[in-house]
Length: 353
Ligand SMILES: [Zn+2]
Image (cartoon, rainbow, N blue to C red; front, side, top):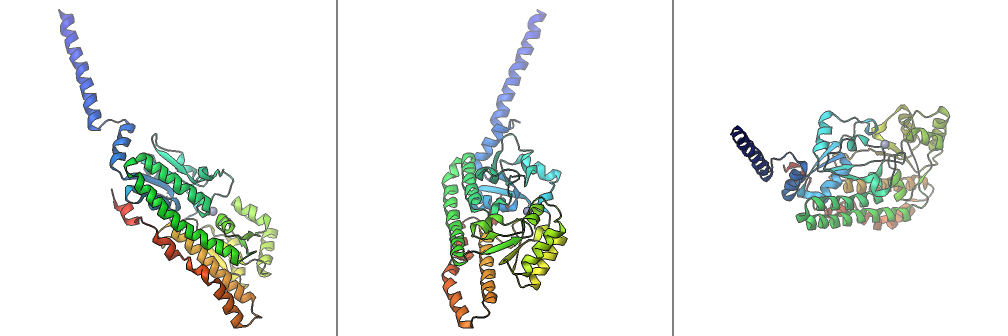
């Protein structure tokens, strides 16, 4: 008899447990991440965490109101290469549905703690860049295009109901990016054989996309790429290059200032060689990555036109005016036009919960 009285409560208890499990699953209170991800994905917005704000900005351009983007590294005042995330940063990354990273060793901290169900989108992966390659991939048109497509696919997978919206934002982005690339192509045509040297190879891809030749002294370049101190002889070679005006532009990474870079920019200012200041992270004053790249292209164009004027001081003013007139058509592809295709709103993307 006792056997039955024991067995019945046990059965009831087991049944009750089963019912509770079913109920909790139905209510979505299960600790199973898969269920939570699915229920969130239906309603959106998608939680996106980007290691750096350059790629975070692109995620906002593609995701619009359907994503909520947090960028861990947004400051142009810190050394991006030596950045170490806080515990709270890592917690954000772990909760993300989509983790957007640069890769190629630039932000390895971002993908170390990827959440179990997170989708990772990496710029390095889209272009096959490896650790040891130049990691400043947001300056590469191939990487930007690859990332825009990858982000569209990742967002569409998580929020299939909004697939059309993502694709239409991708088209708008491609139109804006296309205008910037057109301005670059026009620059290449107008400035055949343009040369530069760099204190740090930050805009290597942008300069290559625009047709510039990198003539940074090799010894200096390899120590800069390895974040080491340049040898005095290499620094001297660089100084002479600037003093002889054998470069059209000196590229200066404002986020990686050093005694050497300060010395080189000082020499450039004294020698009337244009200094092209650029940071690693997207500066506050630009609404988007596309905006920023467009502005940089314009700035380089203006610096080169100024160079042409100083180089041509034996010619009269009217000749210079004509030279400017020839380049007027390229001015049509300005960043204002390029940005009109940007349908996303940064405010909307960040303020939604
Ligand atoms: Zn760098």
